[in-house]
Image (tube, rainbow, N blue to C red; front, side, top):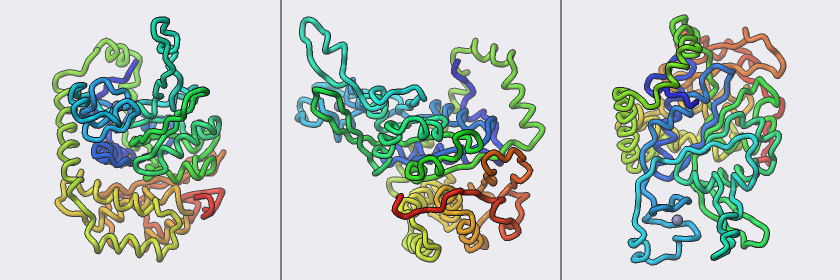
Length: 409
Ligand SMILES: [Zn+2]
C-alpha cells in the first residue's frame, strides 16, 4: 500500500531537513533538463525513502510528444521514432502533459527491464510480426527521477545494472544503450536524476567502499540524522501504528487541503525552475570554488561542478535573488563527504567555518565503523548543538577504508 502522507506533512527535524531541500533542488534541476543526483544515507527509520517517495506528490507536469514512452520533448525529439520526423509530422501527432516520471529500480530488476528489451507483443503479432524495442525503466524515466533503494546492495549484487547507471550518470544528460540479440543497438539520450538511499551501517557497507566510481557519480550525499525530540518520535510512532495505517489505506486520495499543499510546492518548483534558468553563479564565487579545489587538492571535478549547481539551486529555493557565499559553503559537506577523507573535509570546513551560517543545509553525522554497533559516537555537526569541528577527532566525522585513488575516477 502506498504511503499517502503528503510531502508537506512529513515530519521535519534537524537531521532530515537537508533532504527535503535536496529533493526540491533536484526536481527543479531535472525540470530544466540538468540532472542532480542525490544519495541519502542513514539508519533505518530516518525516513529517507519515505521523503523521496513522497516527492512524487509534488512533481510538476512535463509536456511530451503524445504517447511517446521515451518522453520526447516536442521541441527536441530524441527517440528512435520521433527524432527524424519533420515539424509537420510531429504536429500531426500532437503533445500531451504527463506528471514528471518517477520510476523505481527494484533489486530483482533485470538488465532488460532497466534498459530495454525486445517487444514480444509486436514480435508475436500474427498479422504483422515486427522486431521492435521496448524501452526499459531508465529511458522511460527521461526528464524525471529514477529511484534506487539500497543502492549499496544493488552495486554489490548487480554489476551489470551498476555499469548502466554509470553511463546514465556519466554526463548531463547521460545515455543508455539498448541491446537485444538480432536487433541493431539503440543508443538514446537520457536526462534523469538518480535518487538513491542506503544504510551504510548494514551489509554490504558504504557505497564508496563497494563501488567508488558509482559513489562519485552522486552530486550530493546527505547523511540523515536521527530524530531527537520526544514529540517527533511520538508522532512517528503514531503514523506507524497499525490502526493509523488501516485508516490511511482506506483513504484512496489526498484530502483537498493536502492536495492544495502539494500544488503550492509544485507551483513553486515551476517558478524556481524559471529562475534557475536565468541565474548564474557570480564570478567571485566561481573563483572561490576554484581556489578550494586547488588549495585542498580535490580530485573530483564533479565535486566542484556539483558545488556550483547546488549553490545556485539552494539560493533559489531559499528565495534569495542572488547567490551568497553561504550557499556555496553549505554545499561542502554534501558534495565532499563521499569524495574526500575525513581529515581533508575537516580542514576544508575549518577553513570556511568563519563564513558559514549555522542554519543551513549543513548537517551530517559521523559514520560508524562497519560492525561497530555503538552509536554513541554519533555527533551533531553544524546545527545548534554542534561542537566546533576542531574539537572532534577524525573518526567522529568519517571513516573510510580506502583513500581516494585518482585513476578510479
Ligand atoms: Zn519520442
